[in-house]
Length: 116
Image 1 (tube, rainbow, N blue to C red):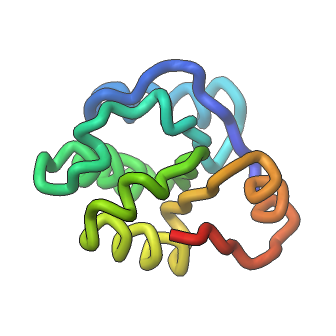
Image 2: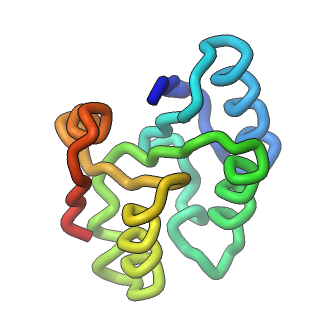
Image 3: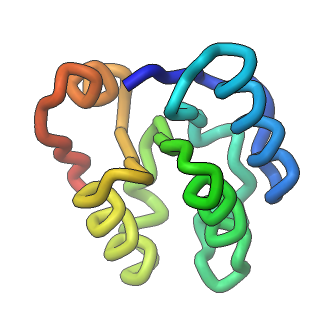
């Protein structure tokens, strides 16, 4: 896995496409790491559709997405979000990792445990 960690906020689908292009063409990466603080609050409220739109762009362009940071507060208040995190971490396209140590484990090929 070759990752690129963006420093630009991903507020919408166009920001996602821009990050995908930067990762692919600028860094030859196959996965974008996005710190939690670069995502809008609406991303964590699944009913807004923001997360779905952003994640769908990554799926369409066959680019992995890793959300880096603590999402436990969102998972504790939303059963659908908690379920989504759990299912995402079982798959390949989207991962939620709580910290740099977990990201390092993911790079090493270890199983991912987020606590969500």
